[in-house]
Length: 461
Image (tube, rainbow, N blue to C red; front, side, top):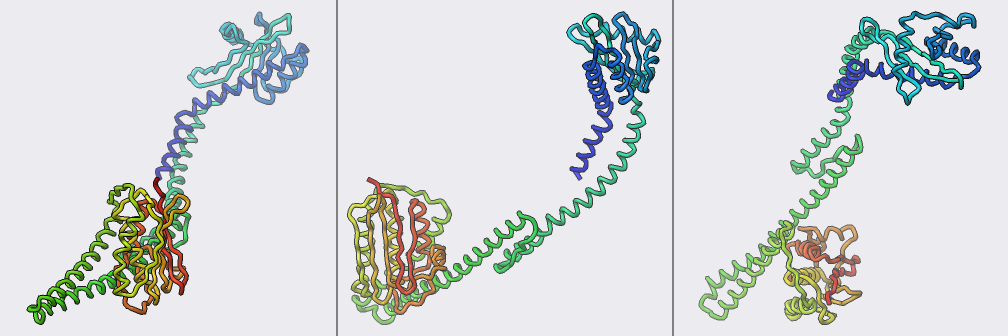
């Protein structure tokens, strides 16, 4: 409707308010164009020139006069085809005097003058052009006038039609608005209903993908969001199940050994100490699980301020690997290490140790029956490349991207109890920590042959 009103306003301004101005300008340009053409066609062959003036007068409904510098009229053509003997016509003296006055007002540096005449009622009556021509001996003036029909009736008709135009335009605007709004709003309404279903927890809600380009792009984006939310919800449920199971085990052990101290071994100092040590270890495991959750939350919030220093990455890895060697005696694990010495990088020691720990823990959890885990740290082409390989079941290609998501935990079955358990967020912590360091990272895996996790950091001199 605003668009329609704008069009009507423009029409009103052009057709009513400025109509007279446009009309004057148009008639002025028209008489100047015709006058210049007639003057430029002047020929010393006067008969030929008479023929030219007669042709212009008849064709364009003009009054053309040719008179001498002294005011003697040589010929007059009034828009009718005339014979040669009727060219010389006497015109009223008052009219001739008025023409001569206008000639006297012609600028010295110009050979023409043009103006608009008005009748007694103040309305435009004619457009006039006077141009000077010469044949070398004599100077003549060409007078060209064109009648200007009254425009009052025209303006009145336009005003009457304008009311009809307003009604038609408003009706068309209403119809167009309904059609356009229906076309624009239809897909949005359908998408809104699907979005409401999504908000209610229905992640399988389909999104209407028809309509115009923007609606299809929005449907695609919402469909992708629904897919990601569905995966996230699945990971969340699995995470809750994993955490519930992992928390239950140390809590059960703590309760069991607490009851032993209370009911059985309370008087035996050695057994009581061993039981208390077990309780402390299990409590530490619970603390580690809670800290992992808090650490991931902190990393995902974007509020981590990473303080980097020049650190010896080789020593960091050696220290972390040392904590796993206890599994060699207790669980029969075999750790292979190939570590170049004194590889220095610019990074945060705490987070890089966490990365090492989580990746090695992941390998311990999922390695094969031989319980073999191989770790390497090499300086290659100006980068420190870390790899940890297991001999487990491997990861199917379609699940490779998901392993870095929070709450993800492999659903592969293990054939023996692992020495390290997890909440399924270790690799997500690795991903966030490595991205904070600007590191490249990835995983190579083959089903039935195991997986190799790696990352690369730029070496500092």
